[in-house]
Image 1 (cartoon, rainbow, N blue to C red):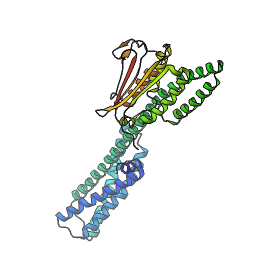
Image 2 (image 1 turned 30 degrees about the vertical axis):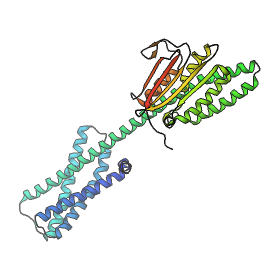
Image 3 (image 1 turned 90 degrees about the vertical axis):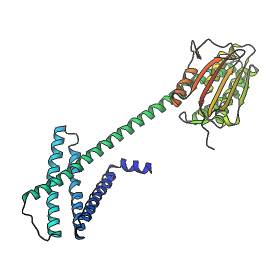
Image 4 (image 1 turned 30 degrees about the horizontal axis):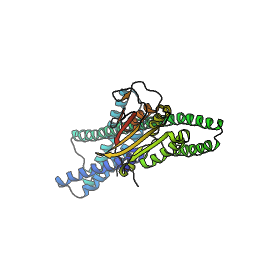
Amino acid sequence: MNLNWQALVDNRQRFFWVLQISGWIGYALVNYIGSKVFEMRDIYVFVIVLNAYAGCLMTVPLRYLYRRVWNAKPWILIFVVFSVSYITGTLWSVVQKYNLWEIYRHGYRPDEWFYYLQQGLDSVYIVLCWSGLYFGIKYYQLLQSERQKALKANTMAHEAQLKMLRYQLNPHFLFNTLNAISTLVLVEENKDANQMVSRLSDFLRYTLNTDPIKKVPLEQELHALKLYLEIEKVRFDERLAIDLDITEQAKEALVPSLILQPLIENSIKYAIAHMDEGGKIEIKAQVFANELLLEVGDNGPGAELNNGQLRSAGGVGIANTQDRLKTLYENNFSFVLSNNTPSGLKANIRVPFEKAEK
């Protein structure tokens, strides 16, 4: 129903005729009710219909005239409105008198001149009201149109920002992976290099086929993370251990695509890569109090923190993750870094729980 009404308002031609016809039907109904109060004869209803029909036809040209002077100076616009309303109202008054006296009173003519003047002014007031409604509705439509344009521009900017943040991560990851493949080729580890290229292809296909604006089920996100981690496992072999603790309910939650990948990439870059014996990354997800709680932790050397944030931020991963969450959830989220136990760094994300449709 709301969509149909909005479509009607947006179609200005149709909207005008709906209001024009409805308004004059309403005018005729009000006069008909008045005729019943004063016990007029049934033939007076025919006069009412003729008067409303005449008013409807005579005010239509005003629309086209007002459109021509719409951008004129205010004093010119006011002068035109009052002038044409007076002329149209007077002409309409003549038509009403003719219908009343010829049809209802069979040629009767009053002797008092003030009667002519009074009836003419009443018609002018009605036409002035019609003009006021026309301009009011016209301004309303313009305001709605400007508001829709502003919302559309805001949405486009919002989407562009999200895409920029999402795609800014991919070249960073791609650069590291291609370096690793290059190293494997140089040391003639062709089998591992080929395996890494194959998994990189699958991972990039996923990133290209996933709209960065839309949210995806966490289960689908975990599948992409496994592709990414398999690529990294080619580099680190047994030095990289992964521990997943995901509840069934959490798997159904909607999350921004590739929201965890930069956090895992940071753990690998700043923790696992600097540990001779390798290390472990823990990924946890659960639903609590209608919120999705995500956690990515490692057992590396950790980092210096200040109020849950890195004291000296390096790279774009964490900053982009925060910016994407801010853009998508405004203030309805939290992103906190803390020291892991017994060592390492831990990132906690809290977002509203949205269940994916099956």
